[in-house]
Amino acid sequence: MTGTQTASPSQLRKIRRSIERFGVVEDLVARPHPEQPGSFELLSGNHRVRILRELGHESAPVVVVYLDDAQARLLAQTLNRTRGRDDPQAYGELLEQILADLDVGELVEFLRETEATIDQVLRELGGAEEAESALEPPAEPESKPGELYQLGPHRLLCGDATDPAQVELLMAGERATIMLTDPPYGVCLDHGWRDGLRQGRGSARSGPLANDDRADWRQAYLLTEAPL
Image 1 (tube, helix red, strand yellow):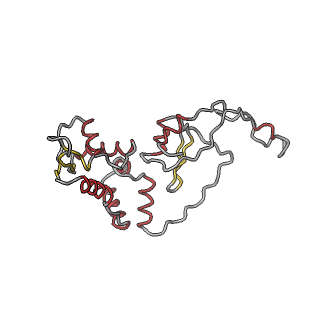
Image 2 (tube, helix red, strand yellow):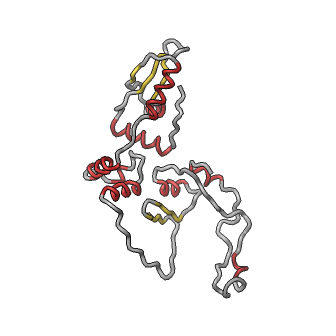
């Protein structure tokens, strides 16, 4: 039975790491196949089965249930959608206990959270967030490709949106909900024409816009795994 839940490549990697680290600790759920005698139909664990096969497992623990089509579909959705929600206070305390022994980098390899969201949970556990003192801006700010900025729960990267390694660095295992983009459009834009017209001569940004000779940005769109 085909499940309704999807998993991003980053989520599948985390499931894989969990199996490699802890082994198979959760049973699959299946029923005798209604149309193929001697076979079984999987109701829960599609992603795990795929990864187990990739890892070379020849068997896995399974709970077999005897249900008709309607009941089988109901059970499959129940298993996927009634996992409950974390109590914020209890979850924050649990994270604190885990982080007493493990590095946060190791933690995010297995959980859905990023370092930023874990930090936010722990801040909320300790009470209202303390106001952070504003940093004095440099006289001549300059960002370099590959620099990653952590802005509270947000992440900002000065990088190449078509570079898989840089996109992976920015996303840190997360999947974007939506992508809002305003890339160069291949028109060879040069802001120099503004100099001396709308503002004082020498104060306008001049020179062509980097990469504005490119019009096809599908490579960047595909790396986000997000709807546009």
